[in-house]
Length: 241
Image 1 (cartoon, rainbow, N blue to C red):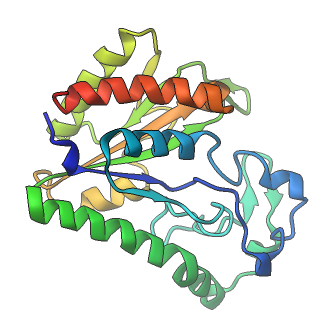
Image 2 (tube, one colour; image 1 turned 180 degrees about the horizontal axis):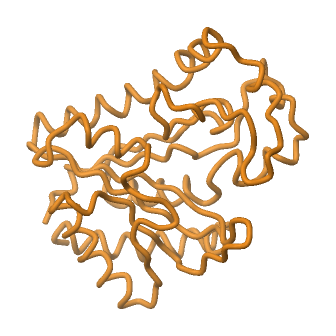
């Protein structure tokens, strides 16, 4: 069980916004409307969770194509050079040298990440442990792979408290008919914000729980609100309310 005051919510891919000075990054503007540029539905779910428990919310402020707030600072796809799986180049990123990538990172990635980390550290200082909920969404298909589960949890299976939380959330969400998969279509051990924070903090002080939702279900406001409501109910049990 947790106190809800121990929770910090972040949504790394909350928006498809590209600062005006970067234009469309050299892409046809249609590419900025879909999942390559952001995680549809994730911001609304993060907002609803944060509102329900009155906890800090950090919404990403630029498209993942400007700088990926979920990547580590030295990750090769911090400023993605192409779109996957299509392989379409991102011209404004492909042209970046090391200095220009660092400038992009320092302008948008670093201030946002430092703001979230400040809240994580504040909660640890007050309560000893923080539960970081990182909200994302995944496409219903990727290439030839069909993804039919409603939700996924990304966590470290060797982190006992994270695994126990996944067990409890599984039960509560399955009770209302939501299909769950763990560490799929991504792994909680892959490079990401939670993975990085987990590596830099002790298991006693930090739990990183990435919640992934299926864009086929949360792509419109009604669907996002429904999934958010189910998640809030499951989390409310976790917080003893």
